[in-house]
Length: 216
Image (cartoon, rainbow, N blue to C red):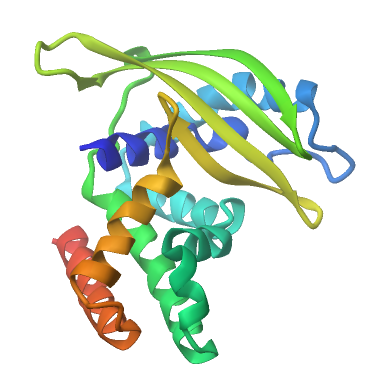
């Protein structure tokens, strides 16, 4: 369930903190705050797009270019990355990108603008990165008692070459990457006895099943 919330929040606010900026702009407190305010409305318009093919195409492009998926792929397998040879690393990263692109499509993406409220609380520099702190309430993400849930969300932004990318997303101080790492460590250690080749075979099957479920 936590992963579901993470993914919906990523989809909802990617445009709010990603690089819709002129080439001369830099990663700054003022710039990050402005993106979060200006682009929040833009992503809501995209989610309201009735054509799901157009919607997914736009979101897939963002996932491929504006989130550091190479870093994420390495991070979530942690110590096991060094146990892979180059061929296995290449195979795994390609599978990870397919997995992320497929898994978010299994959740509803039709969210009306009047169902969402968000506030940018502050932007804090930290070791060359920018932490964008927001409060988000979404009436489609409800607790069991049916009340609207409010989340404290933190986006970790960084410069990657001349490009700004999201490195991590934290909801209520819980990291998306660490949540994925728990899942992947279980797949590698508990399910496959630390055998990388077995893990890659199982992960490939999981990715294909996820893509098939999304298509259906």
